Image (cartoon, one colour):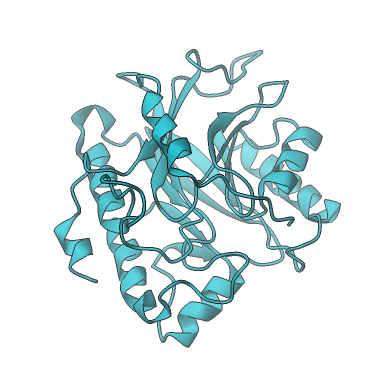
Length: 288
């Protein structure tokens, strides 16, 4: 997994405010976060808005789930590197790890990925990943959930032994095999990757349509949505330090002949800045 420079400037985040108006009645909504690196408070250097923080994330997710038009339609996923930076040996405040774990547990993701290094960090702090999280290993792992009455298959990409090298083709082939097995029993196949942008892009381009949606974290820039030329995979990547969450409104699901992901037709994407529009959840805030 090669490490790319991340775009973290406040100006880039402010551009996110020019997000598209989202559909009133999507078929399904995916909310994704990752690359939080163990941060838990709003950013103190992000201007008066002080973007981010787990307490604001909790409010955003709770409000979305409580929206009557979204009942049963949301899939909330936390990707890798929520507790530990991929290029560092410790989070910014290691002593806060037990409280951070409790905060993530209270948010209540439908699925989450934890790297082996993160799992070891949590064990060292006498805690463990929140219930329902998947600790990544050398083989793909799968999970099936029901969203909007549809079966959704999640594939947690395997963890490479060497984070600084390209992901071996055999790991990509293993993911493709696992996806094929899920395809016959699910309406949507979603990949959850810790690999970083370069290797995720290589996967999407070399194995078109293997996953319908790819939720990426690890090295590289965050973005709302990209699709390869064939339009078969909808790819989103988390920004860093928990300042935002990614939202994908799926206006239609794959399955019809010739289906492709097209912005404004079959999906809409937004990177949501966690600003003062989302008051801090008191229960989460109280943990710190």
